[in-house]
Image (tube, rainbow, N blue to C red):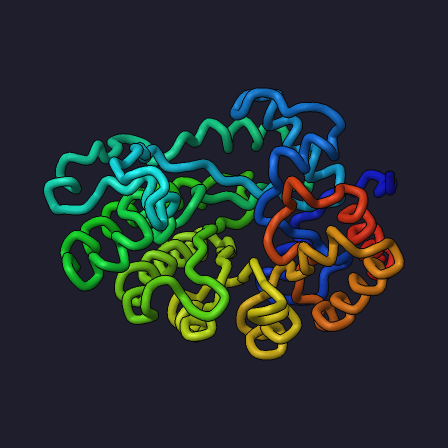
Length: 346
C-alpha cells in the first residue's frame, strides 16, 4: 500500500484555490464524497454506526490521513421520504419511487419540518475533532433540485412544470427555505471554512429541467446560498453532474459561485472548463473515475501529471476525481494519484 505519510493540514492553501488569490504552497485535494465501502477498505475496518462520535472520528482520520486540508461533509434535511404506490417494474420506477407530491393537496398534507432544518450536532462533533489548520467544507445533503425530484419524481416534476406550475413554485420555495436556513447557520460556524451544495442538474447532453426553469426555481436558491457564505467571508462550492453548458454563465455571473466540482470527460474535460471559465470559477477535481479504476501505475502517474500540468499552472485547481470515491475504485490506485500529485507539486 502506498504510504502517503502524515500531512499538516492548512486550509488557507485551499482558500487560495477557491478564491483564486495567490498560488498555494501545495496542491490541495478535494472530493465531494467517498462511499462507505471505499472508506472501510482504506481504514481497514468496517465503519462505526453512522452519526456516532466514533463514526466521525473515523471520517476525519480518513480524509486527513490522505493529505486533505478539509473534511467534506453534508447532513440531510429533516424531510420524510415515502414509498409511492407506483407499480413495481413500471417504467422509471426508481426515479418516481418516493414521489408523494402530485397535487396542491399533497403539498399541504406533507409533514414539512419545523425547527432546525438539519441536525447540526454532527458538525459540532467534527469541529471538536479537527486538528489545527483543518476545516470542514459543509452543506446539506442533496440540493433543491434533487429533493424536488425525490418528492415529485423526475417525470412528475417535469410534467408539473407545464401542468401545475404553482405546485412546482411552492415545492422549490419550501425546499429552498430549508436549505437556506441550514446554510445561514453553517456559514457562521468557525470550523466550517467553506459551504457547499451537491445538486445533480443534468445528464450527458443537457439539464433535466429547461434552463429557464432552472433560472426560475433553482438558481435563485444557489445565488442566496453563495451570498450567505460570502457575507461570512467564506467561499461557496457547487457539485453538479451533467452538461451545464447553458447555465454556466448564470452560475458564474449571477449566482457568483466560487468553485465547481464534477467533470466528465465525455461532457467537458476539466482542462476545457479551466480554459473557458477558470479565471471566474475554480474547477475542482476532474480525474476520470474509470481511468483511476483500470489504469496501471505508470499510466496513472502519467495521467495525473498531465492533468496537473493542464490545470494547476496558475495554482487555481484542486486535485480529485471527476465525481467521487466509489465502492469499486481500488484504494491503491487513488493513493497512487495522490502520491504522484504530492511528488510533482511539493
